[in-house]
Figure 1 (tube, rainbow, N blue to C red):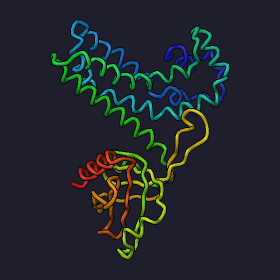
Figure 2 (cartoon, rainbow, N blue to C red; figure 1 turned 45 degrees about the vertical axis):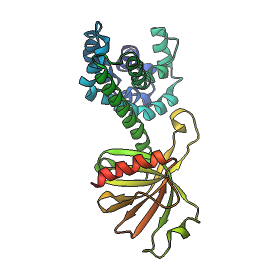
Figure 3 (cartoon, rainbow, N blue to C red; figure 1 turned 30 degrees about the vertical axis):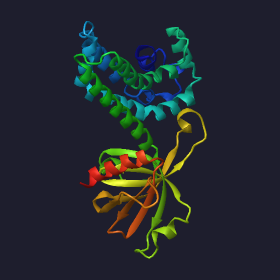
Figure 4 (spheres, rainbow, N blue to C red; figure 1 turned 180 degrees about the vertical axis):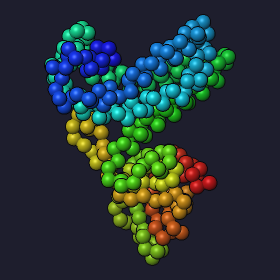
Length: 293
């Protein structure tokens, strides 16, 4: 792909086949695929080969390189831009010519999906290896490697949602790390304690998608898009945010194991939040507690 497509975009002999709108868009189309390729070719593959005789110790290999795996997050974040560009130019003569020269049965987009498929496959492979590595040397490393890869997958998934936030006028990067994101029912009470909480319960809840960062929690409204592939992916229009420095939390709301409260400025604003399950609620409450302490 890098030689037969990406490099060909810079080949003067092919220039006449590339439409002007596609020129200089190489970085958008291929993202950091070259970086991923070099990581595997120069570092990770060589590491793996040293464990050919000791497959049960391969977890160490993942742990040593875990930081490098974050290059996949960058690739996945760019994927929607890449896909949208591909859809505009998929029938370009340039791509057809490259595909013909390479004698590929599949078109370029199938290959651009490979890194996304690869990063999701590692956890399956590590799970399989763990199954056959009970009580042997290296089992702990395999478990730790699996946990780390799942962490990277969660970060990739969360960031894919985060890049779909629209209407936020600040810089999301300044809010610190994105810790959690998910959809909830939300009831609000803004009048300083006039309304009793049980009166609130009658009102219809709002559907909100929450993004918990280290410094703020964002409330967004989810919009489903019509379209195919990544265009079907939802976008989130920003509604408001709460600074974590002024947030308090009540873990239990009477009568519902799935509800908790976030309140702001000493209960001036109260948000009753209902999670889809008690387990999701517990995870969020723990994460918010960690931020607050």
